[in-house]
Image (cartoon, rainbow, N blue to C red):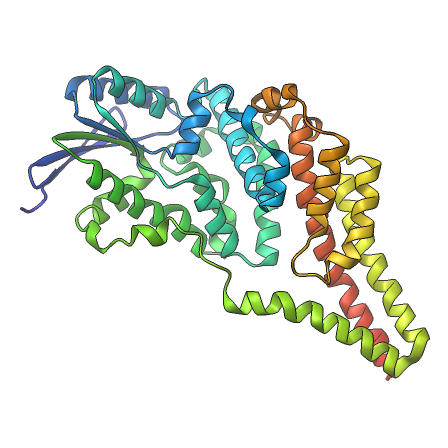
Length: 400
């Protein structure tokens, strides 16, 4: 049967009724930072008395919203070993950005989703968490960006920590109709269009698939207004959506996998050529350049995170070696040392939701400081490699 759509706006919230072979979906497009929007979501569910309520949340975000003790179970050593330090740090920064916007406007982050969940439970409706896991979205974004865009991405996240107070009414109105990730990464999105595909288009498909799959009888689906056009488009034919691929973090490209080994091999070859053509003097000069650049920038990165002295020395000792080993990274070693020397206490985990609301809190809390050590030391080591290599090639050219 042909799907029939009927769209109208009530108090700034877009309501779209879609008939899916006898099942009715009421698609509610909300403003993420609007108390009026949250109020209307609750009234819509109370009036419709749906069989199912779908919300734009994933399981991890739902757990964070519902459980005040969600952070207590974190194993920081496991996070570092599984190479998820940046993903966790980025997630915390996004959470902080959203919380500070909410505090500015007097609205809890995800207020409309919380109200939808509560109203759905009161109505006895089945609850469907329809969004893709935030870790998958961030991983796919990170995987598709090059080194310099990774630096821009992290810089954009850092700048968000101090940018909330400068947001004016025009920015707020724009945010009401955008995804929170899209609002934060808008500048990077223009130079890297694939980011929009991952943040918005892929999630439109994912939400449409989950909503249609969950629809039974009458369904109310609460999503951000920015996702409504895409969901309306994709929900017409979800059979063409490869949901498994959307839930998977793609492996690194073949070129990236090859470069991971080729670059260290090339650096070692430059060393060998230096000793062969320029003798001990040229080879020794190249060795000093390599060790100095890697140690300096990795150590500087660790210091910027206000690391423990032992962490600083571990970063400067590890960087020259780990930069030649594709399986290791200076930041991982430095992070593990920091976590050992300043092991987070239960109070650090309990204070995390409040500490992430300020720049000072990010550097004060032992959990976030460890994450900053990992990210900054890794970035520093990478910068050291880019600085040292051309200098070494110049020495090689002079020796030849």
